[in-house]
Image 1 (cartoon, rainbow, N blue to C red):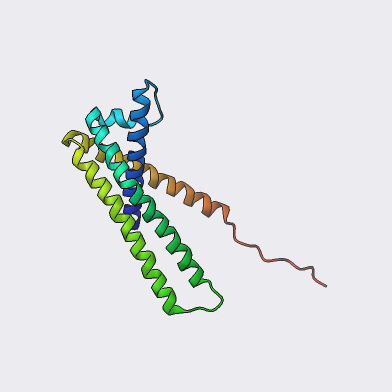
Image 2 (cartoon, helix red, strand yellow):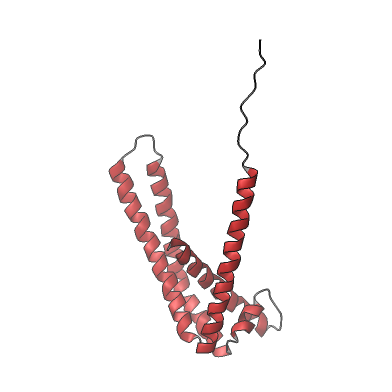
Length: 164
């Protein structure tokens, strides 16, 4: 479930940035790296405007929620690794971290939902395809990284000592 949440968040952030940056480049007659995303979805200028507005409205809340999550993570980490372990305080800090994480997830899902409402059925189908392709590429990358890690970690050979 956590990976799914991260994927949704990543897609929302990528789409948000891509829509805004690509719309600006398109308005200036320039091409950018994410223009393909806009072309693939074939968004109308009105849809791009709506998505930019969603991102503008939600951005301050997202920034605040991300900062709160990072701060809660630091506090939790410090309490876990402090010299004097206080399990009750760790539990409180864990709950604060979980609440901050839930708040950020809610904002990300709200963004995704609002963007989804703007897409036509054809655009939504294409977006699903793009998300599936992203997931497949991501999983492929994880397999490659995992293989590299397992190949790079060699078992330690016992030290040989000269015999007297």
